[in-house]
Length: 257
Image (cartoon, rainbow, N blue to C red; front, top):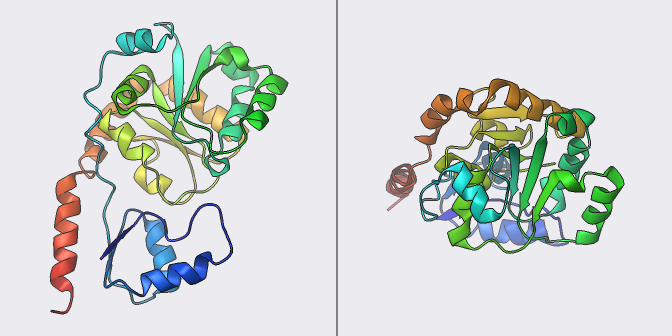
């Protein structure tokens, strides 16, 4: 049995499909964590035995702390509006689209800043040049190095909202992390993200382009963080480890003995 996070990698390489097909045919059953991955899997194995379950919450990073305390630890001013882009920086995650959105004059006028926390997995120079071209360096808080596990809670606690401006996605480990710390999300309408973040409930869903991202950011602050919290807590219940255990057990029971 395999838990399939992605059936194909985000960055395509020669031989991906052949190697994927070889691996998938060696398995008896599958668990996927988004509808998109399930569709990709059925593209290889139409009759595959597969169940869908949401990625369980990350409960190993400790408890949330007050935003003011988290910002103090991270060296951020205690007041102000803070977005969080969290995780590895790779092209498919659309950080460049978000940087363009930060260049929208309305974002600057609203006093919104972006905290970028995560390592570059590609050329940093391209992003630094974009930041200078847009003239937005003063709107950014760059923590672009390795984030130790014991620091994760401070980044999530310091932010008002987690933003995922992905160009394409199957699912995202950042989403259950945001649920764990009860942070609303702004995500793009790609892959499995809209199913994981119901629009107007756990967050907002926008198109993957700078203008739509800027509009979504401004809309979030119009509604306010507390608008989303009750809905977010309901969705959070779907991300339990018990659900994953039950799904695997039920799938195993259905296999031929």
